[in-house]
Image (cartoon, rainbow, N blue to C red; front, side, top):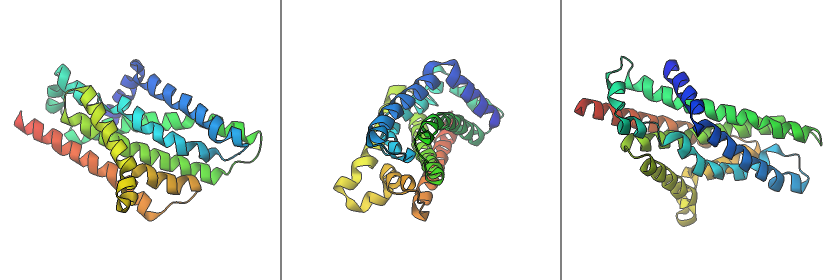
Length: 227
């Protein structure tokens, strides 16, 4: 699993994908940092993550749409199926590789925190809780994106499916109020940036990545058995 994860991480930085993801994220964070924090004279580091959470909807597919779709299109999927490594370790390795990109990206946000310390005393606990929630939200999105990529050989289709799913879960509470507790971005925004963590939010943002990881494994195992 760790070998796959390191290979995935290396692939992200040997291609433009990793740099594009991090670049877009930091560009948008800089904009939100100015609009949501600096303009209000605030030292609340976590405020920019209310807006930054929406960015994941559109940039996560950059990481995920090629995960398995590209393997199938180029014919290297068969190498995965005949590899001595299990499907489970391959899927978890790819997920872990993407998780490393998220951690690297979050590490760069320390720049904004350091800037705020020059003007006041940001609440470190709230900042860390916000980063934890953002990581869990990102992993939720990545796990679904990986699942979507396992369903098709077309990267664009995988990306469109992923974005569509995120938008549906984002706006679903506007039409069905009962789904508010299942809207990932709303669950994040209503808890972590406020410095609070609820059991329901943790269960949702931890169980969902596990669910989609399992579904991805099942899809690939089925395809392996058919081949």
